[in-house]
Length: 356
Image 1 (cartoon, helix red, strand yellow):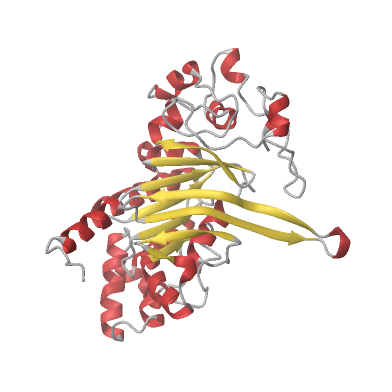
Image 2: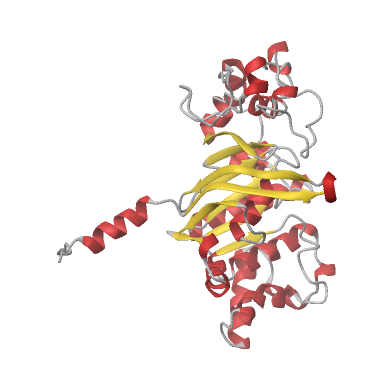
């Protein structure tokens, strides 16, 4: 019988510390459309990999319909995947029983895009925040009230407002309530699905600042889903760019914003710049995205890409590092030095600098 090293518990702890908090591989989801002989499928998420480190933020960006929100819902198992795995703290989320999944979901929470539709208008604000404790059978009524008031203060709300119903709050205040509810069970990972896109610009900065402060104080990790690259640049440690269900580029914040190599990423970044040379303006994406039920052969971006050549219609480019230090799924990936230099300039105000 093999002997177990007395240092085995230490080695296991070190391995856990070295592992990502979340390591999703090959996430795939397709939705049927039509019926009978006309039945087709939308490949909403296609072989997507996402890794999130403890205490860090992974930004997921792309145009509407690119598959960002579906990716988040797959990780939460709000919808079931057609393929792939999602390891959370070393456990495959897709292999959990319903009972185990319910317990694990305490540690993965969601902030919704629309703060108005994400709350029950009949509930008092304090009860909205306390609902996760009630659902999970935690604490008595008095303790729930006390903890809800603490969370109100943490997210910048007056605890005396706890008796009010949602109609009495602004959008920004309701989003703070939604954030407090997401934090109630002290999760390790929060999936923030476009959490500021429905808010006024002046309020967006406040919510972004709040999320940043909460991460610093609580060590929570975020999967931050957004189409606003300025917000993603301010918040994220790593960034993945999606197009028509696939990750087309991924890397650190500096990799993606200062050394972008995929033409789609460059097009999104060029749109952030108010001026620039003709070359930079030429990066702007042309045309409309193809229909998801009838994507182009080969590279899905080729019908809008200024670099497209014959091979782009024949082969799907793989997400590999072609010498730029981070993976890009393009046969002709190339860093745009001018675009990177413009984006490295401190000319675009961050959300933290915006005032109400």
